[in-house]
Length: 241
Image (cartoon, rainbow, N blue to C red; front, side, top):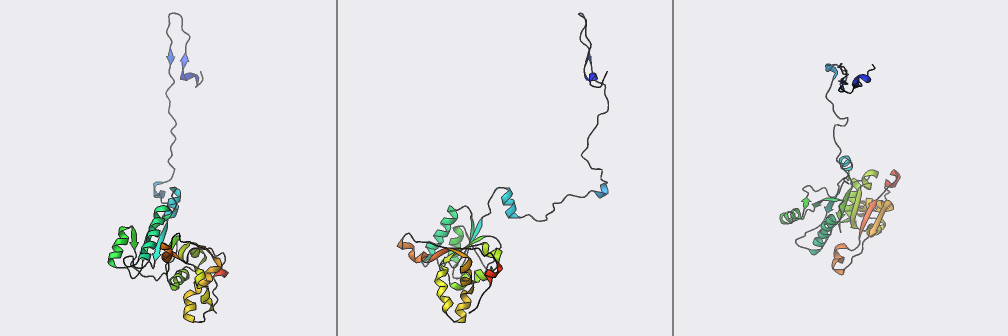
């Protein structure tokens, strides 16, 4: 009898006989093990090839899009003036409207302790270090700088005067066209304060905004969104007059 036949053998019974069931012979079963034939001394605890995790890659794996922080410089006194309150209101509304905007970080050296507490109650973080606009955009960020001085825009661009870093910047502020006439001025101080602003115009996409009401004109006139996309290092060469 073959091995397969041993699984179940049925003898043909007579009319007065019962069925006889023959069970298979018991033998040793083959056990498959997942263990490796590695000596105990050679077995080491498993560790991932990367020692640190990347939050951006984690977000992609989880299906989340990384958010862009909004850095707000030069907002002014929200207690004393209406225009800064309008400008702050727009920033908060954008955060509520657009899911890709992350935390709002604010710095202005004239902010009082009371104003700082109000900003924090509105969900903003008040920065404690005055970098004078020289913040490096190692990750994509929105720089919200309505009606700042030209030197502050220049400091931001100078600190990020690299292909990759400039591509990370989205800037809301004064239209760079406003500073075109500075190129005609021979004063070295003025030229130095706008050098990177003027040089960035050749690879910047600028979108001028229009105010819907005269009530907001003073807060947002001559403002634009700026996106920077230099393609070559040669575009970052600065030419002094």
